[in-house]
Length: 72
Image (cartoon, rainbow, N blue to C red; front, side, top):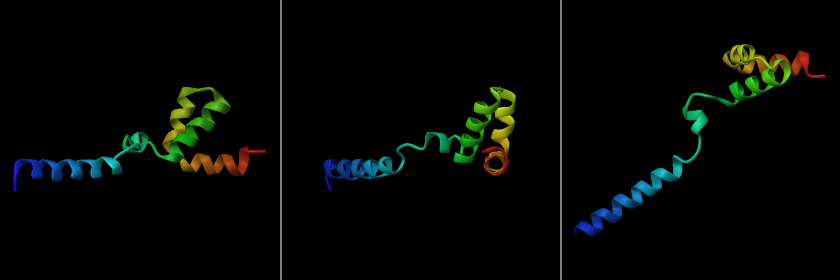
């Protein structure tokens, strides 16, 4: 094998890996959909950073609570 052939194979592998690694920055940071929803809902209702952080910690529990008891 020549050096050119090895380089092409490595480049194609890198392109393949980067295709699967696009996006998902928030998910990689540990912020899930439930947390994002909880923080957004909390902020829109309370306008308080402390409540938004607390509700973000509880994430899906707060989203379900909001959907059942608060959304009217």
